Amino acid sequence: MSVSRAKQRQAQDRVNQAAALAKSIAKPFGGWIATFQEAIGMNAPALAERLGISRNNIYAAIQTEQAGTISVNQLEKIAEAMGGRLVYAIVPREGHVEEIVLAQARAKARRIIQRTRAHMALEEQTEGLRSETEMIEELAADIIREGRRDFWQ
Image (cartoon, rainbow, N blue to C red):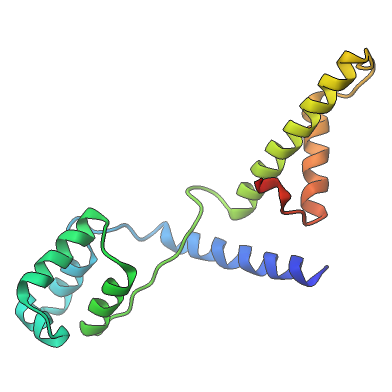
């Protein structure tokens, strides 16, 4: 196995592990800042003092988190001020990361096979070809086995 393929496998394992953990964690209704504050019993004035900002800035941060527009840097600073740490990850919506790779490889293979079949049809050479699905699966497997990354283009 090549070094780049080994690194890809390690990254896939890490993402899949994060995805499994993320399934059990849902963003709380009021957001993580307000939830963590409640959990440790810290009010906005105390948090503002630790951060050296106004109480209104804390309320604004809570609102921007709820709106989904807070920066990772700001969220990290607030978490640290409360004695916590920010944890974030990008994980597949569903399933494993390998399924995303396979779906993309299949899409690339489908484009190649359809283009090839169209040329063959123009030359009347389609007699005896295997099914399109079989050919797509075989080519997708080859693309993945070769460690090609050009299928994202």
